[in-house]
Length: 397
Image 1: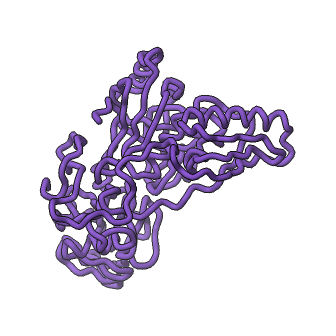
Image 2: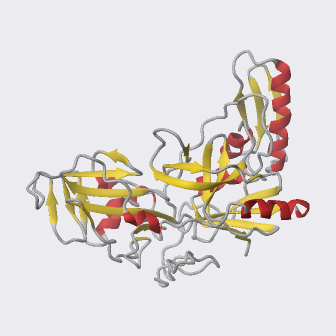
Image 3: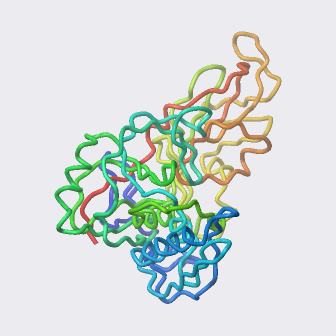
């Protein structure tokens, strides 16, 4: 295990993989992000964006919204922002990235709330949906705190261990902020922005200089860091430009885990055995798919579920599964009860179609492969419990 991944002073407390650098002698990084990147966009090229307002919004309201947007961007460290009220919304000329513009247009202040229940997949009824690649529906308790005590937040790439958020807390408000978070008990917490959970994280004791992660995906880290700057409400709803499509896994930059479960004729298989440990797409036998590429041939669109399966000697297609139970299952064959079974598969509780081997797993997703006669969805696999939840705590670097 340690041969596959070195240390970046960040580890799982439950004895899982140590997140860090690629093995000695591996190929160098190609197309990766810089080793460190703050959420403030110092040095980035300036560009124009419009945070559009509903038609008919009066000029005074838009002017007040422009003042709030300007203040938010300042809290994010965007020092070059030129913010102008227009008839159709708030124009921003700045080096702010798309995640910061998204947060600048957020109507309501960001809060931290306790998570009381988590369901796999999008919300089909009551609940608070997640953002990002992994779909969850959360039940939350009353908000514990706003984020006004947070003075700065940045996003850092942690030497091949994924991403983390570094943030500072105002010393004058530290005790109140710490006590508020402690009021959530020992359960998981949610960073809530405009009715969505932008980040779920474990409870912990923050310091004046604090961190969440690694390993986070870059897009979730950037969106959460920007949301930490939103301490007040806008007088009108603004619409920001669309967020960029998240990048595929990059060499020495990203570190993702997805849960994988397999159900055959009504019974969940045990965890996939450890396989491919010397590579950047592998299994540790803990129910997770690890994706942190070391070479071009396992990065980007090559980091597929099929690659993960191949490295264990397993196969999956739209009509065939040959997994770690050692049995070939073909669509149209029967289960022991005599019923005809089919191959089906789900991601975060949503049934997919086509070849599962071509699927690109993303951080936090839950993948289920099934050979079954039961028409009902299989639900969450037991392997979902192995997914890592980063905690808030003192920054160590």
